[in-house]
Image (cartoon, rainbow, N blue to C red; front, side, top):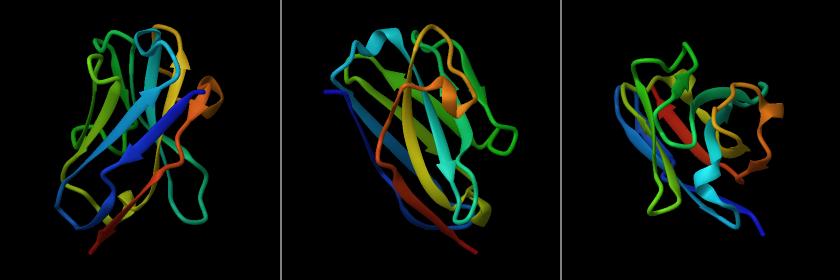
Length: 124
C-alpha cells in the first residue's frame, strides 16, 4: 500500500519559515519524481515545486521561486519543502505527490499518488 505522509505545517508570521516533510512508503522511491502542490481556500490545487528522481532536476512555480527549496533524501524515502519569506498568500493545504518517471511535472494529472496534506497558515 502506497502512503505519502506530510508533516511540518503550522501557523507562522509573514516573513517566517517552515519546513515540510513527506515520508513515502509502499513504492520504489528512487524511481519516482516528487512534487508539492498547495490549495488555498476556495481555489484550485496548484503546483508549487517538483524534483526529479535523482534529485538533480528541480522546477518551481513562479510564485515560490527564490523562496522555496525542494529536496529529497533517498536514504529516508522522504522529500522536503523548505519555505522561507512566507507570505499570507502562501496559506493553504500542502500536498506531497509522487510520479513514476525521471522528471517532475507541474500538472496534477501527471502524478499518481497523493498525501492527505498539511495545513500552512501565514498571518500578516
